[in-house]
Length: 319
Image (cartoon, rainbow, N blue to C red):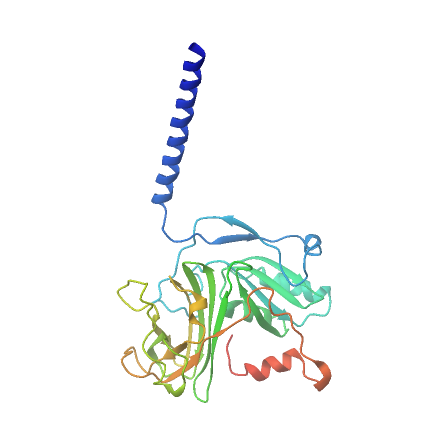
């Protein structure tokens, strides 16, 4: 009987310890932010890269505290680069021919605020950048090395069916590009660049439809899924601040936004802060390449290079 009493006492003690550990875990979880935690990525050495598919960058996921989010009504300009964005992996195709080119690109990018790590694949002319720097800042840094660069992918590899989307405004008066990247299931990163707008504040939004038969007037209402309860529509992106050159830049995040749900909808820019009018321009949101999805080469049979193709497609775009 003494033996059974000892076993029973030990079992009770183990149960109590387990219950305390579980209650502590629940308590700690409830005290943290309800926002899903994003990932930090660790880059492998170039030796380990050769052990995996050349079209995918291997990444290690470590759960950390989520980065601070930018408020959507604070548009970023050239003088507000100190605001922190969530980390993403961004891929560029860069015109590089030798190790000297590689070193020049790496050295320049490593001076950019927010760049955490840089990997260069010279054989594919691909540069992979991990960090929180805006696309505009990284693009300008690459161009300052005297080399042509084109953004080919951005997002979180292998985590979502659709990680990135883009809307392009191709004139004739207003030009620009808006990029979306899924950071985690509760957060999307948004970057935008416009030129050709009038000085002052302009409202902008994600609208229900991608129907441009009547321009912005046929895009429907501001996107607002019924499952999201909020004071304002989920697709309300608030305002852009346009300078005296007609340019506006934005870098920020939006909670509860799923990039996959935006494909086929539209971005609308309004003539003022008032979104009750039909808007002055619109562009359809299309799926964009995620990380490791866009290593295609331009066929040389017609003499066109990827750099000439890039210039034709984005001749007036700022990013």
